[in-house]
Image 1 (spheres, one colour):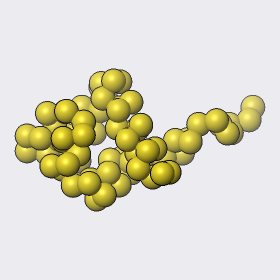
Image 2: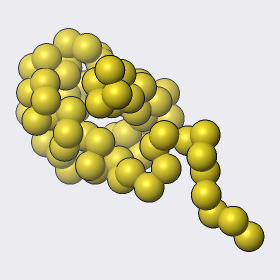
Image 3: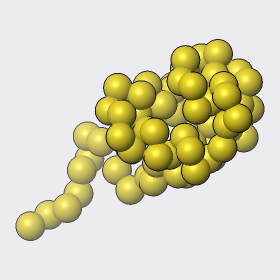
Length: 73
């Protein structure tokens, strides 16, 4: 079975790497303004944000879309 996913630009990129990139690029304050998620605005941390994003598909989708717009603009 072929594991290649040519139509998925996020294939092989870990959620932690995406979040760390966005935090480095925008900072927590701007990231919290762009995506209204409590874990970005109230005592933000990578760990708490990852926990939330893994359990919340709509939030993860927003983070992934922002990453794609930022990384590949």
